[in-house]
Image (cartoon, rainbow, N blue to C red; front, side, top):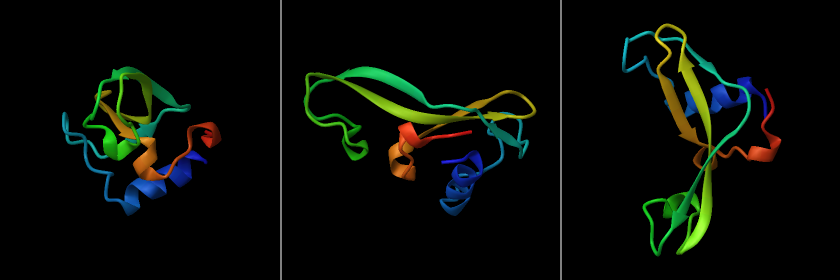
Length: 90
């Protein structure tokens, strides 16, 4: 999936807003996928993202947008956006 396709998805979901830190309206999507690993125990607040009962090692894949003015970083989980990490392309 290209960066342009991801930006289109974010716009459709009304997830492109001005920067909460400086009110600038320009963000850059960083290339690549990012993953946060954690240990899940029982029911977690991440259940809607496909993380089930634990204990188990889990990970959450996300994209990162950076404000073009102040560098503020935003993260969006890939699964709710319909983005599959192994198909993400710049």
